Image 1 (cartoon, helix red, strand yellow):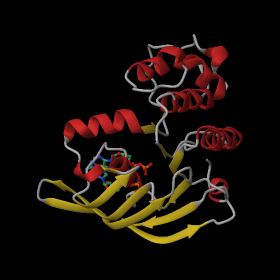
Image 2 (cartoon, rainbow, N blue to C red):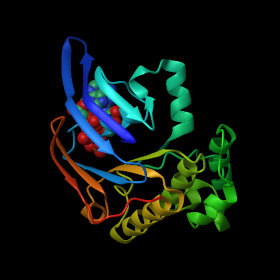
Image 3 (tube, protein in one colour):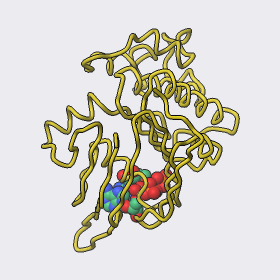
Image 4 (cartoon, protein in one colour):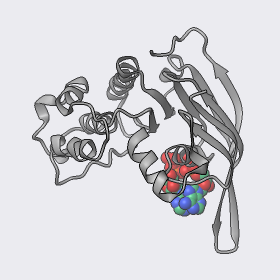
Amino acid sequence: MFVHLDNVKKSYETGEVSTTVLKGVGMELDKGEVGVILGPSGSGKSTLLNILGGIDRANSGKVTVGGIDVTGLDDNQLVEYRREHVGFIFQFYNLIPNLTVGENVEIVSNISKSPLEIDKVLKAVGMLDKKSRFPRELSGGEQQRVSIARAVVKNPNLLLCDEPTGALDFNTSRDILKLLQQINKDYGTTILMITHNTAISAMANRVYKVRSGEVIEKNVNETVVPAE
Ligand code: ADP
Ligand code: ADP
């Protein structure tokens, strides 16, 4: 398995109060697959994604991505793992406001080992003609396209999307989901996505339903062929 979570547990300590957020989560994703995580707010979805992306650490259990034992990495190795192997897309784009579209993608490209060509990626997301614009001059959907370009330019093994369409209207959401599918097909990027948008569930290889820090249901969609 390309992505494998085994019995992942996580709790946060706030003063004397301990909150258990993940109660032994298991998850699997093959290379080139699209996985979807569904579940109500506060069920631990973002925490799970952050642990997979090396932003947060599990308390116990094992996480492997592309043969890398993520749980076994020290802090420096975790930074490198994040930089080289993982692309992140968030609900609120997180672009740097005083950099142009091109520059937002370039700063990620500059710190990557084997980046893709910036203009090719901008073309793939339909933003090449707006390369010199600033984020404030773009619509929400366009900003999300740029953040997809920024995540994809480093040619990541794994693309993690935390409610990528959560701030977008219906039609724009559909376009962004189509674009992510296209990225999956064109680059063979494995994608794991938190979403409330059930349209994507039908196109996903695996769907995980999470509630209160546990996987309560998983579905493998055999009819969807993983990307090469
Ligand atoms: P959503 O339901 O859209 O995923 P949340 O409001 O639950 O968003 O959480 C958004 C982010 O805020 C999470 O990724 C988490 O890291 C952070 N967060 C949520 N709750 C807390 C908290 N009690 N203390 C610190 N950070 C939190
Ligand atoms: P979801 O993404 O499903 O909304 P989260 O993973 O954001 O869920 O959060 C799950 C629970 O963990 C929430 O109760 C939230 O308040 C808590 N939480 C998340 N991040 C932190 C944090 N850094 N410190 C304390 N509690 C947190």
